[in-house]
Amino acid sequence: MRAGPRPEPEGGDEAVREELARLRAEVRRLRTGADGRTLIAQAQGMLRERYALQDAETAFALLQRASQQYNVKLRTLAGAALGAPRPDGRSARWFPGRIRRAEPALGFAAARPPRAGRGNRSEVLAAVLERTLAVVGTGMGNVQIADRAEGGLRIERHTGLTADFVDFFAYVGDDGTACARAAREASQVTVRDVATDPVFTEDAREAILRAGSRACHSVPLTSSSGLVVGMVSAHLERPLRGLTRAQTKELTVVGAEAGEWLAWYDRTVVLDALEHLHTLGRAHGGGGISRR
Image (tube, rainbow, N blue to C red; front, side, top):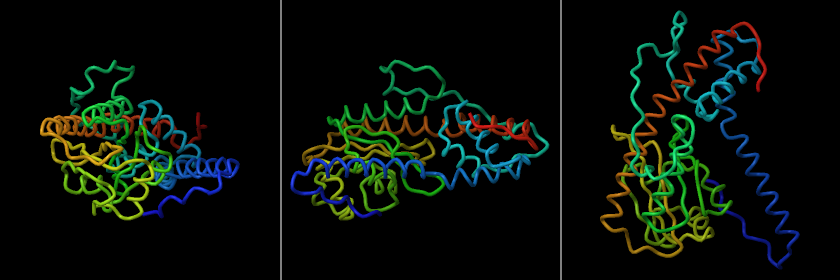
């Protein structure tokens, strides 16, 4: 894991603090831009070879169009394209005969006004986080999604957390944090006091304490088959005595509903986007196209 955040400059030098904040923002922007770049480049190469595309620009344009058509993140689509079995070159469909299932209901999101568009992943993640924080009684937390290409968890939604916290925990592996333990054990994990709990590495502990969190609770988002597809975590400003049975029971339902929805999204909306990508590739094979 990365080294912990550097201490703030002393002496109250406002210009230095502003410059430090600007540099940190630039590092986060560059890191975000680089995140998934290798994966996308690999997908471009695969598409060029598969559909005899003119150049990498054309391959990127096809990925971009399929991503926008189905509102699927470019990195997610690239990883799915690389991980899916190669389509039959004679077939107009990538996944012929696949069974389509209805979008699962989400009890915890029933009170939220629906937004336009089917399978709105961003809205579901926002609802998961909102309900979890309401149950725990805090305003700090984040949602992570399991990274099927690299393993570990990546933050996709957050609120009330510092920029340094989000930067430090943008990606976590399979050890050294409460969320990693919850993912590994597929069960809820409560940290009553971040300052003393042995689950954290010292760098992770420092990063959490500096963000103003003294306790946290992580809930795995689990499909009906038991696969952990994500994680939602709540952070509190003071040590936590523990959650009640009613709280953990409700969070279990939230985790199960959200996990099943995310599994449906992967096997329905993401596959729809791949089907569209296949159609575009067949249509533009041997030619070129510009990105939007």
